[in-house]
Image (cartoon, rainbow, N blue to C red; front, side, top):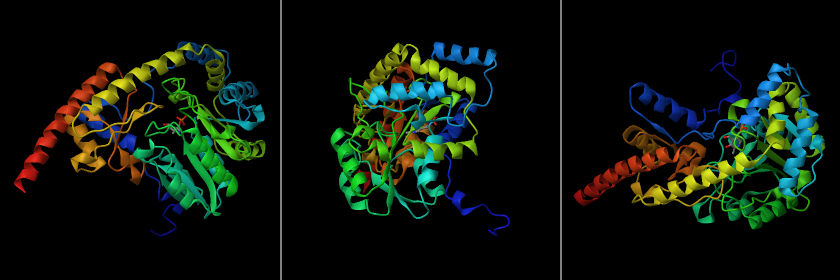
Length: 403
Ligand SMILES: Cc1ncc(COP(=O)(O)O)c(C=O)c1O
């Protein structure tokens, strides 16, 4: 393509998120009269809690619809510093907090601020697709570290030790993880922290699911390990914890000097986050938290149902994840790619799921299902998947017999 009509090479690698492609096909089926159970999109099936909605609406009615400082309203930054600090046993200053429209800008802009062209960036694979996209846009070299089922989908530390070197500028972590729901144990975080200090690299810790954890677990943050806050960017948000995906509200917590650079990038790109959204965010953090606790209890119930249901289907094995709202079952026994299996389940079982490869090549052999759906729908989905898969196994066995 000639340069005059082409697009800059930094955009050539960009692809849509897999979830939206599956959603499009599911909607086509629905338009043709086929009902589909949606277990593909990673967002809470809850409405934003009433007190938060009321606060946002009140703010609009009162005319709080103007620009704010690019890094966010000071009151919100204070509330975030307090809550996030209490959760992690750390003291944050509000000036370390950068508010953005969703967590995504606090992935993307710190990445732009840190990565020089050619720098190596280590990131989890399977992992949230934005990591690889932002590394490449920044000109960095993406270095995937596999998340392995045998390690409960924590980082493969052996691979990490082999891959980290003096060119490594940044290590990205995500615990609890999308797409696996896996949680990194403290011992693994300690090893990552040791390597980050030894090789003098940054760590970006995407903790957006840190409050969606089960079995009374508390998820450790790498930022709370000795000498780590000065090289860590915590990425967090309101989308999952407070069912606020469409409000667009998230934040990063990082060293003040980096926060100032990220604020400049926000200044010249998004400007600021909607004022009424930020006011709703203050209510989310400072209002009653019992609805969050209730939601987490409900997710835990659904997790148990979906894990037990999948494990009861011959040929599927599924670990019990400790966080987020995803399961990542192993479907290798069927001899089909995860993409073929996802297509089959959508077309034949009427259940929309994502192939593990929507999160990178090490997701091959797995599917991602979200259980942010009703128990009734989850049970129906399990039954429909079970029927299709049992038929597939019978066909496979006949074929093997023929050979
Ligand atoms: C791991 C992870 N990080 C970040 C995000 C982005 O969140 P937000 O909607 O707040 O931008 C998501 C959303 O799916 C996610 O799964």
